[in-house]
Image (cartoon, rainbow, N blue to C red):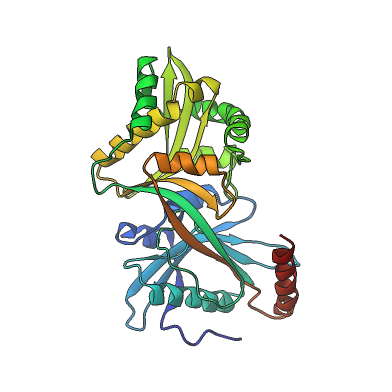
Length: 338
């Protein structure tokens, strides 16, 4: 068994209660919260919670994800929606945790690991130990200072207000169903307006059923804007320990025409600032894949582009490890043809 001997850290499984304890002390993605992990654990996947310790047995980082059953061909593997959460964002420590994770996979007979980078704001790349590196951009408003809104932003907020728009918070099944109903309209409008192919449920295992579970867990919050008692825009956010992630927003034609997206963001930004939230992340996409119109819209709201990194490892164990050279060649050919 080939271990990564250079790392001064080791990883061990813990239960949900141990993982939840003092999670707020760590720089964690909302997608590491146990509420999210438990909600999306479907299709025979099971939650897994991991602590990383140094040689002095001090807790360095936390990580949660899904143990995926895989297939006979691929074997069991670990899927993480974001990378390890450290108390202090420190590149050698982060990379040491990734190496410890590889050792953990070997000891537990897991074939590989996948680390996505959703809401993972450390900005630290994974170590260059093989596999596929992923680069992602998200748009984040850090809330240390009072929000400032540009002229065009305020114009759209005022237009919505003049037309009688009202802002509400309601986690009822009725509002969740309204969100689902508006998603198809949003898909068509975004493609026409921004040239973006809109994925209504862009995360692994996210669907209407698991969305309901996330709302019921208390992690997801639903907000909506109405005009004349008719709902035209619904926003779903994930909120944990002052960290806010905009999971999805859906509108009809009237919502876009009246500037209800700006209206919603205005009320949410002020709400989160008054609640002393750390940041408001309105998500993003893989580098180079987001339409310029949508990117410009997000920056016009005052959000800053943050680069994030993920990793899809190669196979770690024999005999599947023998496939790694073929995988490397295939990916190299794919890059050349793209």
